Image (cartoon, rainbow over all chains, first blue to last red; front, top):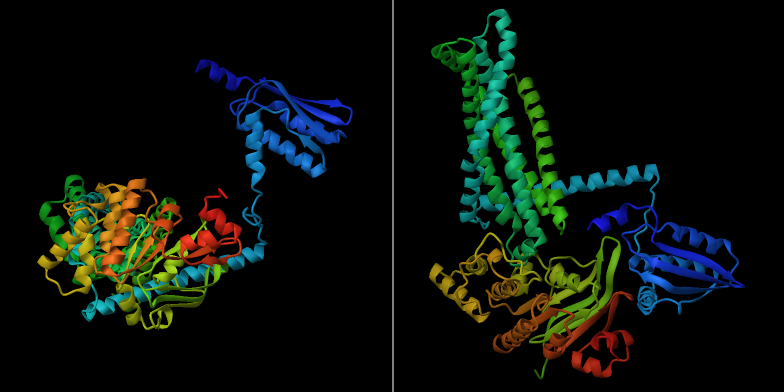
Length: 385
Length: 251
């Protein structure tokens, strides 16, 4: 092992190639151990010498060659290509048998024309154009998916859809009760943080008591829903995309389709309905946890009494706020489920495509959640609620 | 088989991904009770042709007809009805991984028949026994070997007693004995159920052992260059490409 390491670090090449001139003939003398582990300092120099010389024919001499592997073959292929380009005649008889056979194998089947991918540099305007078209395509795919989901929902509503009940309840469980621990932790901490941030400002006016209403309103109206939405995007939306994407890779979706079972009804609908049912419930739970977080700060650090904090909280939460929060939750449920399922269904047929689908599901969900929040907030503002 | 009755007809089919044409001008007929082989070198579009035949991909041009019905021109319900009469064994089995083998086979039965749970259970056990997997009903696809997955996939493909069975590379990844057993099973299905069978493969042993009709796709000219009974094809063909393929390049 140690010797090997020393080989790698030494800069003196152990393989050599020299170009010897014998009249019209250039003789490439190969010597030493040609290995991909070693440097091959003079290979390029030899090619250069061959190019500069005016030889008509090339022969090889390999009596001092002690070992060889692919590094020798690639060098020889380059040499042969150069000779062919310049119309030199080549005699490979001087090379070891194995080398000759491999060279024969490598040159036996000519490259299929058009097989190699050519990298085209697109002009700037053209690339802007093609990216815009790709964006339009993506938008159309999204609308198509929405349309298909709507049709499937319509069929479900009229009782014509095939709805996998057992799977629905399993999904209900994974995206409901199993999400409770992480939702508890995150919303409790968000409640704590909100209370701390508010306390610093409010205690300057001696108005610590309003920490309770700050936390309550923020959590119930929007923060609870947003935090749950983001947790569910990372937890469940990603799982949906990975699950459906893997089914796509395994041809399982094809199998469903050819059985005449619509993947929309069989895979997407149960996931979407489960999330739409569970998200508002999780939101209420997150609200409670957030308020508990604020309560810990209020009672523990701001010297508010339990009754004071409780009464201020109850006074500040209006039913409207609760409804708005639940509405947020339901919308986020639809968004997370749709993004997860859509990216899964669009998944390509390789392992890396599943990774891309998962990433893109989470990114799509989070962006859509933020945009939806902005829209709902503005609409509420305009409506004055 | 004195009067071969056309079961699937393909006319002027062009297959393309976007603007990239894979094969063009494919015209052939699969007769009832044929064992029809789709063959050709790697990457010539065999599996894509299969996807066209089973209705997973719409042709860029041309027609695929089942009996008298033009598949892609038919209304959605008619297409569903046709697809219900075909069974497909995918290359990897494509069993639904969240369900046990029994649930996999039971799904099409639950969807398309009015059978009760007990009857479905009986049929599931029969199908598993037919492919030599009796007693494996409660296993999940991840818990069985590749060969078993393939057989389980076949059991699922046979669930609704389809008129036409499609096989995508049935012997890929199987040892020679299992591959042979699968071939025997295919012959048995054809003889006992009278199913029409379409197989995508490049396994020469299977091609000669069971094929009764075939089409040979060529990736260079992007069309079919031969067809007919593979054994006759081997005797009669003048085309060097087909000959090389059928003799493993030995002649």
